[in-house]
Picture 1 (tube, rainbow, N blue to C red):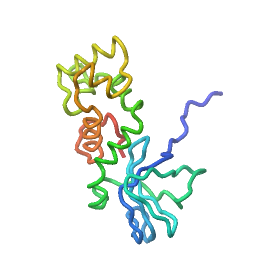
Picture 2: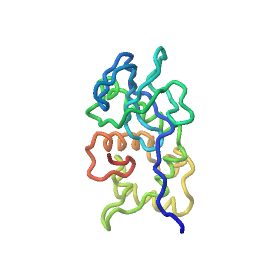
Picture 3: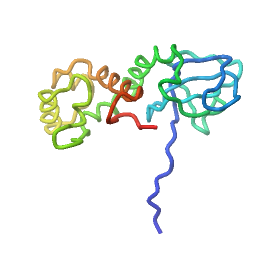
Picture 4: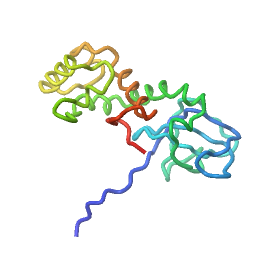
Amino acid sequence: MVSYIQPKKYEEYVYVLDFIPNGKSITVKGRTGPLIQSIGEDMLILLEILAMNNVKFTVGERVSIGKDSRVKIISVLGRLTYNDLTPMAKNELLNVITKIILNNEYKFVDYFNKLQPITPRLHALELIPGIGKTTLREILKNRETKPFESFDDIQKRIKLKEPWKLLAERILEEIKGNAKINILVKRI
């Protein structure tokens, strides 16, 4: 018998949004210690992490949290919402999202190649700031001819300025919970 249940997927890497050397956990009652507020590289989930003592972290640092590859981390404590973030983490979020997008360009360019209509009148690409009906038609026409290969390729062929910034704005909107439809971030 073949099982069609997919194994649960976990983040392997996160990016530090804030490091609180003597923090009090939001997700685990009574837990204190060196805490990190972070965003996952793959699913863009906000996570609270317990770090090892006497280890330092910098904002924007990429940290391994995979079960077999933890070096500076004790455990993942749980998910956070945007409102759980410290002012520092909220302030750094857009910059760190942009860094994740640029470090994983192939994945995010692929959204321009693969996103589909949501309804007969609304295409998922239109949910990205700066993309209206005219730009949407250009994207669809161009990707049909040849898939986009990079952000530079998108800028040259579509004349869409800094598409990574537009994606970062959309991701931030979804993380904040301001989007009716999520296309890039998994809902909690």
